Length: 267
Image: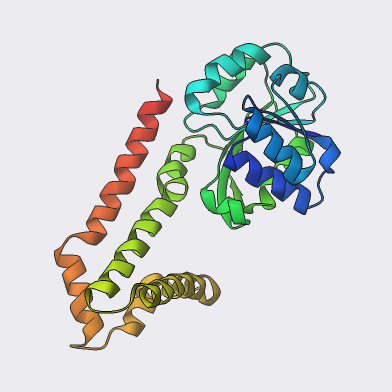
């Protein structure tokens, strides 16, 4: 399989690293179109892949063309490649807010996959939701599934409406978790713990808790109740979180992110 990346940022790097690690392609079969010379040099040195500032040249021979540019750059990039892609090629876009109709019309191409990954993909622990146009055949769908499987878990949906929901929940979600971790560390320091110790305790607590939910298959509410003793310290802490509106704030935050994603997609 030959893969071309239009844009060589961190998420593109995560995917190409996954493709190489998963042995889906050799380094000589991966190319990146990247305008920054320093970034091209890094990618070539780090992965032994081909790089070039010319997107048309990069995309020409690929089976899969991955669009990994910033949303504000998508229009100009599509203008460069409009009418240049072969019908046998599949386009995979990780551009936030870019709908399949936008991509198909902008490129003059019918085989389009829309993907919403998240940043843990950088360590192979990502969560990706994806959908595709009717022009994507079964072979290309399996190719997409294989590629996305190298960066974590993937879920296919037939309805594009779920992409905005995934943007709000899983794509933005790491930031919510990082904010909680940061607050938990600061809380440890506040009550008198050295910061290094607070960091270690907070990180392992979050990691272990998530793993327990996954491995046990139990509902988070059940696991929460197992920690709470009547009249104990955990019950007191949860009372404060409820009184401060933390659970409701999380729901409101995801809802706000979802609505923002919908508006961005509408232009």
